[in-house]
Image: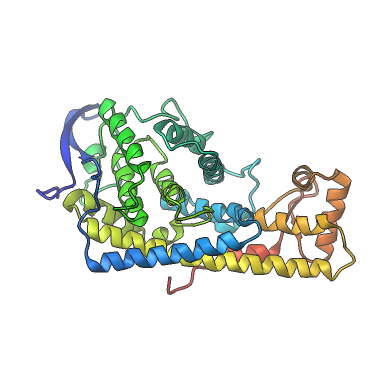
Length: 399
């Protein structure tokens, strides 16, 4: 399937299987990204323009909000659930939105919530001015796999083992895994490490004068997935890098964009488009598909942002119409918007009030039907049903 128009080269790799003995095969090594955009059709440039317009509308609304960071955490949980599902780690969205970070209920939930912690840290580093680097990516990968079955000696560094991706439909039962795989990425070693450094250098170079950020994000995402630099977590980190790239290129001021739900709904096409770049240098089809995804994701995120703000205002109106007059009651509404589930102890800590005061505030909002309680008497948790309803609202069919 790799013809003369491939975007990389096939290199021989040897190995030994305990059952089948010595083997030899080939791995795919992508060519370095160039300085300019690949040749694209007018239809693709129109898709890129639509994506930029949708992203601009999302960012404009975020900039006008008094505190756009309120919406970051719920957006991250939605992204975490979807990006993990793309990799085969599934937890229902409702469960993810109402799960406690401190006490995951299962190994799969820990994996999903690890993504939220990793993304939070990545955004904090970028906002503090820390530049993207291989070291940063390695630290993020360590956070992602922490205390999961994938956590091990290779965590937190560029892989030193050969990995394979997927399985060919024509593979046979008992076939050597490397030969049964659909895609075999770059072999480990100094060359892989150098290529990852080259990619990071390419991503951190400002080429907005010649390459649209949507296009550069599409190229970088392909390159990261083709290199597959870590033993686990490459898909989830790669999709996080899309948002980080748009943030560092000043396309987004607040990283609330959730890109994975659209790709998850089209996972076969998503993987096929990436694979076609490797086999046939099908950059045009990939960039157009990617741009369509960003445009749809931005539109959905924008709508959800407006719905959350509307819900926040409605809940505050309920509080204003009650006997409650303390500013902390309104602060608790904001807290319930940004934290899809929480405990009284967390309110005490994050709002800076006594435990008794926090408990009374929470109970007051429960009595007003602003909050609802779940869990046992030992571990009471609270959430705002109206907020959860917005976050669970399915993606519009025309998106």
